[in-house]
Length: 238
Picture 1 (cartoon, rainbow, N blue to C red):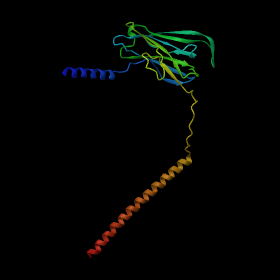
Picture 2: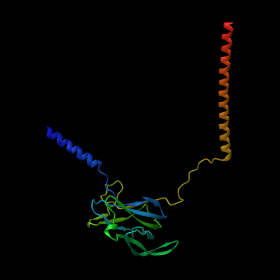
Picture 3: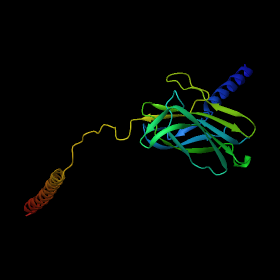
Picture 4: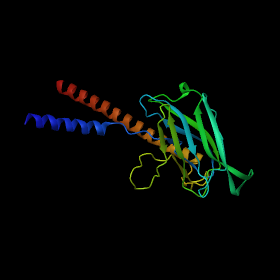
């Protein structure tokens, strides 16, 4: 009986610890959303989930045809890391306000110059780009990420994320696209004009005056009552 109690207790503790364990961190995009057609600064947030190794390489794959590509991508320098940009020629050029684009960025590869420059355990790194011309005909931009550790371990964040589907073990980083800037429907609210403000102030003043007069009347009534009582008592004594 005692062994059963100990075993049951151990199982309960194990379940509690499993439920209390922190969720596995994923490679994500910051910000998580941006307006369609906008130019936005994006950072890929890469956590280190290895207890003893460092993250020494990060590769981000961008959408390419038949998916809607991002016409122009520039990379922000990261101290201690080299960057390699791979482009892909388009079969059908993209026409923008700035001209015709014949090739797009397909992969950006960041690599630590030395192991010492890698991302330490329990830390994260940010790898930043500037995306010019986010898609206008899509609701999200799906990237793929591959991170490499100093011990040779490779983690591929390429599992598709499906709505209402099972949780992906290694989900792709996703940027959600919102309504274009300036396209939001304005809500009409009553304008507060100077006349309105004057009326409000006047009403407030009237209320305050009425309250003051009421208080004065109460005070005067109390004084009158006290005087009348005193006079009555004096008359009775006399």
